[in-house]
Length: 612
Image 1 (cartoon, rainbow, N blue to C red):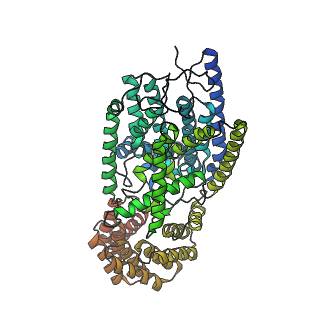
Image 2: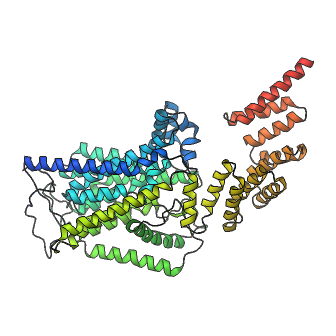
């Protein structure tokens, strides 16, 4: 008998189960005409999903790069800006960059620059194309898993249009999200094929796509766990455990055998986790237990789980930044923990009757574990981008659960269709609105300030953008707001000093630079900035003293070396100045100011030689 899964196929007799039958979908077979009809329906739905996704996200072609990570990943990264080359590819494969190892993501950015230069709209559009592909692939994945066009289409279209995914799609730096999901979904599709006909070559495909996903972002590290969930339901591969057999799969196997089958994948996951931890520690990104106790992390984790659920069901006040709070009310943590535990107990207790609840819930719960904050990296409490693939678990519950709940209602088809249409209309409007905030850095950080409280990072980054635009009054206000929240933040105080200096308030600027080094004597940027301020006032000896302080801390600081060179040139030592400029340029060949000063020093030396 040919093995097909089609939403229009007739049912086949399943094994008799003890107790009540599970509330789930039926799996079956069809003849050639049924298969052709199903393929035609699937093709039409896939095209509709793709067209709708592209329509909703078309506006990104007008978007700019944003001043948060886009600089370090694209616009100010020398390797990325120079496009594809052998040397750049080797760097991507061997470097721990920004506390991560994601060579394929970096290479994809290089390819964008090679094709489009630094035109931001086209970089954005590539994210949209990957997101569109992911949505279509999800449709075909769940069409195989659920044998239902409409349930699969619902999961895919909600995934495509949900506003909580805007961050992953509309942020160029989050190419790693959409790209890792692309390989992740293809790996699952390969696994479904393997489940139907276990072959070494098919298993190798699963492994290859899994590794490629990990090379874009370590988020797919939970894939082996997700595959075990699919084994339970809907693949029905766990003998004596799975609630429903599958006519399109070979005989079920014991749980131990299914785990053993995935040992190579678990080994790869463990290696990826080790590499990720090493990369994050190399960039000093991992927060120590002394700074953030495990109890606090656990409280934040359960609260974040509940917030992820809420944002998925009712996306409201979404932000690029959700910072860790200074403290967590105990009752809030207890209530959140109770919600997570009760749902988990219900999912386990109803695993036979409601297998979709078990698989969907633990998909959501498990895939968030790497980013839930038990190993804290950075200062965020949670992030919408982390919910890109985990949210699929909740979509499974909705797609299968709602029809199951309404199956006895006489007009259930009409009610389900009407509810789905209203929900998708709401998501389209919400996504369009959420996209507007990603148009540029100012709208993005203003939105974060509006929908969160005490967001010092948003104020700080908005201040940087205003300062770059020459809007120093606005920048000063933003920095001052950030300092009200975190009075001893050296970066903010330093940048406030720069804004004051550029506004023409040297005394106020000097006070800020002095304040920074009082807090942190090793903060070399403020020594250099104060030296530059003194240099403008022609206080050469005092400027030289500040530059030397910086060099004592960091002998290879281009800005300090350049400053020393300028003072030397002004005090009649162009030869010494030339040495300083050369050293600064050897550290940073793109340092335009040092290059110009070197020309000036050479001119002075030439004049002196001509007089002699």
